[in-house]
Image 1: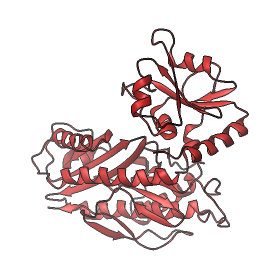
Image 2: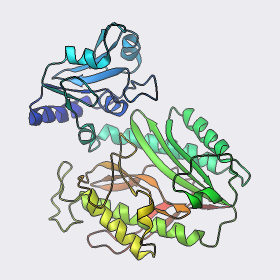
Image 3: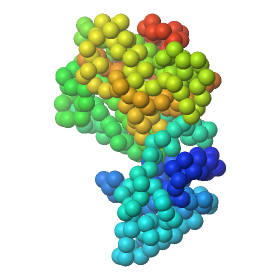
Length: 380
């Protein structure tokens, strides 16, 4: 159950700041953030079948096909459900007719401003964190179960199918399932599954979603690893460790030389500051140009990435928040979703049944030098 009080406090501040009377969410992650429910019927549609809104009261507008089901199965009692005839209006028109104005929405509604849903979803609330922990454990358990049983002759698409089934049985959707055998994992950064056999090693990268939250991870299994494999994986892991420690420092306001007075809503340090630490890490581990070949990840939560760090990224680094950093060095990748909070950093995509290694970050001013426990490759 979502903490609706924490959300309405945040929305009240947003409405006051923008001079608005209402805000509406029909994109699946925005709807899930506000309600804890699912408004998806057609997974290919950019918006769901209902819009959740706040105008001092919590409301949901949907057509008469969906109203009873949503009220019975998806929504807390705090939400009043209003329906319209399925043949009479589009969802956008129904919201425009029934909402006070001025208003904002995260989908295209005539006369409405664009709502900054990502900003409103950050940082995570206490109830988000607990549900995120559960999701992280479930995603890790499913992926690691499949990975422990891999064989060199397995086709990539069969591995992907096994992961889809394992996660579906846990009520987790899989917007991203990448499986790369030795040849394709070295050739490409996004190895969408094919009928190619895994061969000497495999990279498996997955993003799982449930109730609007997203958890990402990569696991590596080596059967006959190439000579370069260990060095490159260790380099990628050191970049990930540096990114995690830099995220902690940025959230606390220490990374850019600030005064360490940052809080959960305002910080002097940005995604670009963390990215600078990531680039320094690539330099230090001997692969200075690798960052140009793939994005490095960023903040996670109610999106696979709420933002992706770039050299000039000005997004504030907040806590408590999920972060999924995913550095790559050709043919290798290191990735988990971590919770970064004022009192702890916690690897969420973890079962305790996969080997780990202690990885030292590189020397960057302002960050903690303590090693980070990260997932290690399984060597078969």
